[in-house]
Length: 397
Image (cartoon, rainbow, N blue to C red; front, side, top):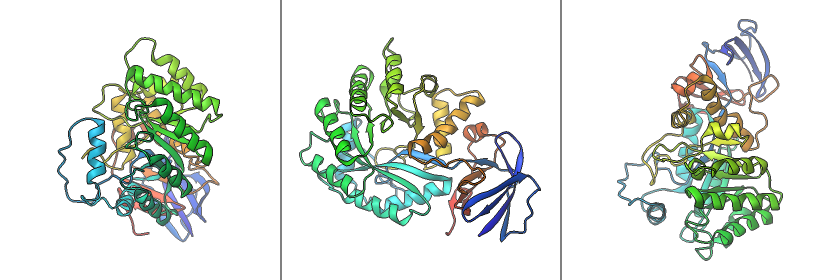
């Protein structure tokens, strides 16, 4: 199938026509230069041409999208949140396959074409949540790139039997080894991290660890992660999600950590949660050469009623959280949600360039910075040369 898209705007302000065929961008020419004599033609209406969006930290198995309102009376604290979800998710209708599909479809509508999602593995639910996510991934594999993290949210070494389930999860198709708060949750930093990296070595898979731990405690576990990454030659294969300790206002704590993270080629994944007082500052990460990506984290689930799968809205939240005011800082945030996210997920061809895949986003906006500061509803999403979503709604395809 061939298609011409006329009058799209590049980030530098120039306008162009695109010729798409066989799922690729075959030609890019000045606006008005490509005739509309193809099988179909679309007026780009001056919309801005952007790479697809990436959500590098999601929880497909948790969302309540499409369900009736669930009254949330959970007490504060990480352990309470985890236990509340573990005990009630099935009774409240969180079918893992159906909810994953709803989240994927909604994400596609907003222009999110790639995602890394953590899927709970625990002794109460076994591998059923992963099985649902794997089925959803298979169903949408032609539209959506999905990495799945086997995530021992209730604890790894502190809950006997979880390590064996994680081993099975990685064998059956999970792409990464997850972990969470080795000291604060598992109460055994060495045992937990040794188990995580042992699984990674056994299965030859990367690692992505939730690190909520604050200040010196978080810094200690971060140092332990860095040490194992370098000792095992896993540079470029480890990510730390949240990393709240990198925002601790303690003189001398953060700069050495940033230097070591850059040296070990560890990626920090931030989500810009508005309620948190400390968080990694994207400007500091960029200045230190630390790779960074972004994700939505929990949206409309048993942890939080807030949020949508829209990574432009999340980019706006992250920009506000980091006090991004000038256009270059806003451009940086968009990059974290597009190109840098794609790099983390191993997607090399993520730029809408001649010869590349016809996967891109057309957004009503004058420049990338405006799309972050004022996320528009008006957008068109193209996947393999086909229009699959318009104005944040997935089309029949």
